[in-house]
Image 1 (cartoon, rainbow, N blue to C red):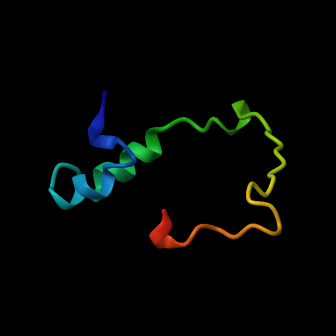
Image 2: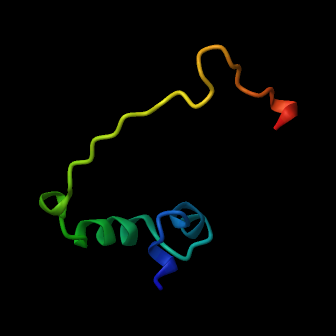
Amino acid sequence: MDFKHDKRLTQRNIRKGILSHDEHKQHLASLPDLKDDALKVEAQLEDTYGKEDELPKEEEV
């Protein structure tokens, strides 16, 4: 697995000198455009707490 270009680690790798900004830009430019392969997804979200319920307070979490 290529952790050097892992999106979750990119900023850390740049800070540590493992990856340069130029390398990162080149990597992104080399990725194929897959927008035509994407599927449209429709979703409806429901309020899981209901209108009368409150979100838990931070100290209760």
